Length: 82
Length: 157
Image 1 (cartoon, each protein chain N blue to C red):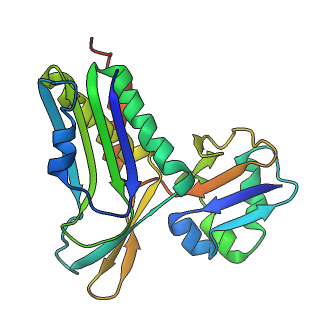
Image 2 (image 1 turned 90 degrees about the vertical axis):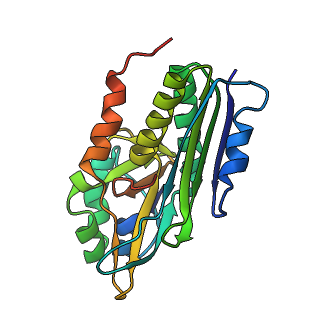
Image 3 (image 1 turned 90 degrees about the horizontal axis):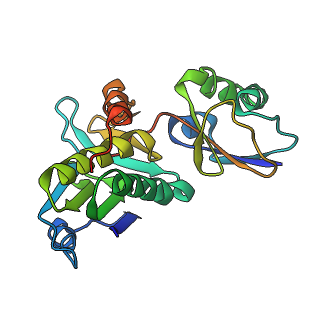
């Protein structure tokens, strides 16, 4: 099982900031379609992967990075701090 | 040894206090700093913004920026302070400061720090306007370009 966190307009669109996923696939790229099936809001928020950025266990990661068991995966828009 | 101070917090900071600390113990010849504020809007008027962040990651990301600057330039001190939560126009958002024996290292490290934070630290700005509307700030392509130029910069001794 992994924990998925959402931030920014991804969180707002999906309507939750965190959920647990059983039997997660190996990579973020493979995880996105699994999440998109959970609701129409998920599908819309995750529709364009190029607009999303990812972190695995609090480190920025590309979408083909491996997701370790029990990982915290965060999905968010490009950052706008500073 | 570089004195590194990094804070992610809701509270405001005092630039005078923070900048005077940059010289503690090191007597650097140069202290450079950048302070980012909430911009005012024109039409419709911006009435505030909320800075969302990823609590588990922001402190480490800001520390990574500070340590990377200390690895690239001969710095005696680095400070990074980034606020989160609801902020009004004009309020301070972020302070980065770098101290070194000479101005070039301090100025370059300072520019590097803010470019890095803008593209790698997990903060998101949501602007709220006087007419009741709100929008998430979009990342700027030129921020990416500004950060990318540091990949090309050779380390200066």
